[in-house]
Every structure is written in structure tokens, then in C-alpha cells.
Image 1 (tube, one colour):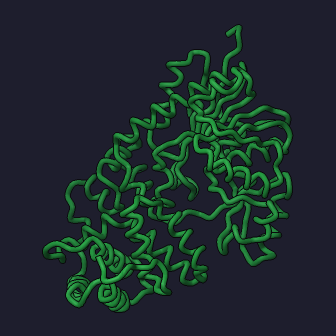
Image 2 (image 1 turned 135 degrees about the vertical axis):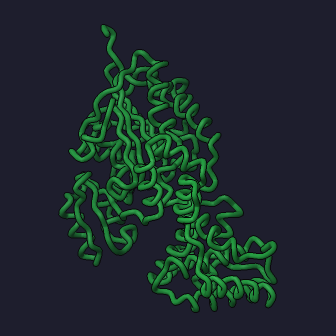
Image 3 (image 1 turned 90 degrees about the vertical axis):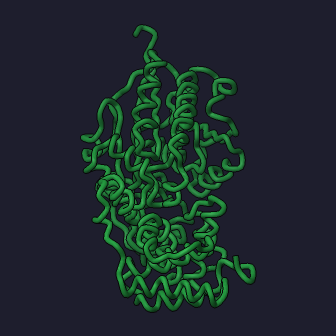
Length: 453
């Protein structure tokens, strides 16, 4: 691949972005985790951090579109890393107006020289300068509307077809475009330690700008800075969480003194939200299949001063083997899913998921719900949530669960703000990324019927 081993960070933002893109592609690593790790390890400053994030996410988000633009200009075969360098460079030239195109070309040529040799540098220079002279082909020339939408928004065609079939062309189109827009930065106020106004004041004292959401009352929109580096975060006044992820705890709406099970709990965002809803009174058992992830929950509860949470390494599907039957007042199943609602945060998801993956996930989701129903008390409440927008994993799983469990019934979702309440139907709520700038998310609620019913 190169004359020498390539380090991820040597002070060159574009070279670092290329290294991250190659690592994501080779190791199937999540771009957001690798990016965060790179920024943290090398203490990259604010200006470089912003550009590194934009180049990495932008190139990934528009990979298929960039390939469509590049294709007429490429002759013969290219090394894998060279193709990624061309994508990265064309992203800057086509989408980032504040970067002069010739600067992007010159930087690409220098990277090609360092990583390869003069011949590769000449190829890169020739391709990019040809694009500058001739411009790229417009996607409007693609006749098939599904294929055109797939290329324009850089989503695999099977996924576009699935979304269009699920929700129609208009909703699917809006969602696919929204997936390429950066998410709103949100935090949740720990209401056991601070009011919303106190949390806002604490953040503003450190130079951040925060305002209360008009959707979820305990949610703040932060428009600058890094909330995770603030004193408010260290003191446990806030938690970093997407606004959509705050819906399940609101729907479960546990009260102080309840016994609650959070079945797929790590890293603990929803667990701690439940504890805050309960005013830190009662008990929550947070379980997860992966023992090492329980440390994340313990760390979060300690920072937030929440002491009603216990953790246990239990596969949720086997909960009835380890836990007393009919013993919990409420159960949250935030199930493993395809993650198709969080593609703007993890753009690599759309290229790595396969249609058959979704079939296998539904089996796990149904097994978790089956186990949850067994440990839930009569008249108890069960909430099922996912961070996907796939109808089979969401409505399909709910319908299959209800068919197999006559003792369970779908119930109206409680404690939702008006904007969300009017979107629910049949005890289910599907939130799309375009609804209020959050992740795509799904929530459903059930009640376990009493003996006489």
C-alpha cells in the first residue's frame, strides 16, 4: 500500500481522514468511535477536529455519489487507498465551498507522493484536474427513479427500495437526504441534581449555548462546544444522549419505588434516565449480554449519583432462567437492531448491513420480548424500542409478538409531548430523522393482562 507504515495523525488533517476511512473500510470499525478515539488520543485542536470530522463523515456519507462522479474519469484499476484518496479529495472539491478546489488537488497529490510514488501522484493529479475542467455528470441523467435516489443520497439500492416500499417515495426521499445532514447535539438534564434552567446556566457559564427542546422537556439543544468536557457533565448535571433516545423512558414512565428491568442496558443512557424519572427511589436491574459493557453503566450511575441501579451479565433471552417470574413492575427492551435510524451518526452502517441481517435480528427481538413478558408482573408495562426505521423490525416485530402472546396487549403511549403523541398509532410511534433533527427511532408499549381478562 505504501512505502512506510502510515500513522493516523501527524498534524495533517486530510491524511488523518484518509487513514480513518481506510481503517473503517478494512476493519468494519465504526467511524464515530475511531474518529473520537483519534481526536482524544492526539488531543487534536478545535479547528482541526471540526475539519477532520467533516471530511471523514462527509466522504463516507457520499461514497456512492462520489464513485458515480469519479467513474468517467478513471482508467484501469486503482489501489484501494488511491480510490479513497480520490473520494476524499472530490468530496472537498464538490461539497466544501470554503476549500479552494486547487488546494484540495495539491494536497491530494502530496499525500499520493508520501503514501505511494510519483506515478500514483500523477494519476491522482490527472483525474482531479480533469474533473475541474469538465465537471461531474449530473445524477439527473439517471433514468430509474430508485437508482437515481440511491446515487443522489448514497444509499444501497436495496435499502432505498425497502424504505420506498415501507413509507412511500416522499417520506423515503426526505429521510434519505436527512441521513446526510449532521444531527443536532443534545444532552439530557439529570433532574435529580438540577433543573433545566440550572443546567443551561452551568453550560452557558462555560461558553456553550444551550436551549430547552420543545419536544422532550429534559432535553437541551447545544449549538457549540463539547458538553462532555464541561463541569456540568463532570458534576453529573447532564448526560450526552440523542433526543429520540429519551422517548423510551418517558413512555415507560416509571414512578418512585417501582422495580424495573432494563434488559439490554449498556451503556446505560436509558437506564439512568429511568432512574432519574424514578427520582432515584426504587430499584432497577440493568442487564447486558456483554459483561465488560456493564462497567459503562456503573461509571454513568456513579457520575450521576444514582444508587438504585444494579447490573448483571445476563443474556436477556435467558432472563426467566435467572430472574423470578412475574416479579418486575415494568420492563424496557431496547433491542439490538439494524441501526438504520442512526446512519447520519454512523454512515458506514448503510454499506455494511445486508437485507438478511434484518431477518436474523427479528428473531432476537422476539426472543427478548418473550423473555420480558415472563418476568413482567400482571398489569405490568413493557416498552419495546429500537433505533431503526425498518418496518419489519418495528411494526412487524410488534405484530408477531402480539400474535404469540395473547396475555399481552398494545396500549396507548403515555407521557409524550403533543408533537409526538399525535404521531403514534396502535400503541406504536415511529420517529424519522427529518421529524425534529434527531435519530430515527421506534417505541411500542404493552400491558400484561390480569387474571380476569
